[in-house]
Image 1 (cartoon, helix red, strand yellow):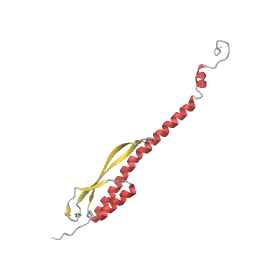
Image 2 (cartoon, rainbow, N blue to C red):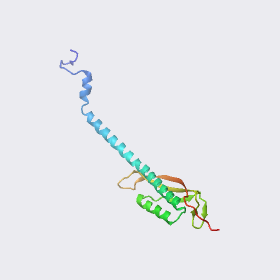
Image 3 (cartoon, rainbow, N blue to C red):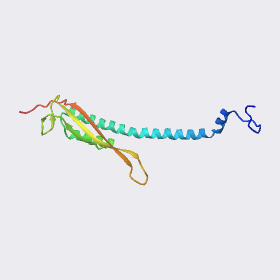
Image 4 (cartoon, rainbow, N blue to C red):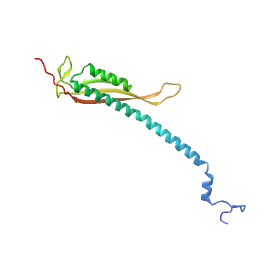
Length: 159
């Protein structure tokens, strides 16, 4: 007699009423959860572009440092490697060689075991939102890589 309503008909217990009344809401919950997961995955994937750009910038700098170490000077081949890597990675960083003691200032030669630092700077444009009728909303993220190397070439100086 507990589960009969005013007119004497059988009605399900109260905990079953909640389950039966919310049958369709499980589908909406699933759809909303799926949309949230897809949005989060897209956000994570877009943030990966920042890290990929930084790794590419670091790779360019390491390669340039290695060429300077082997040649013992900042020559045209260093700039050739730099420009080739810029084209391969589609980045356009600026490069500077700092904290260096040239033994031959004119030819930019670095004596054996002398250290130097190569710095590269790049501004990565991170796209936050891309509306269809106006330009994209972007955040410029400044990146800087600095790697120190040591010359591996001995220069015989004429006195």
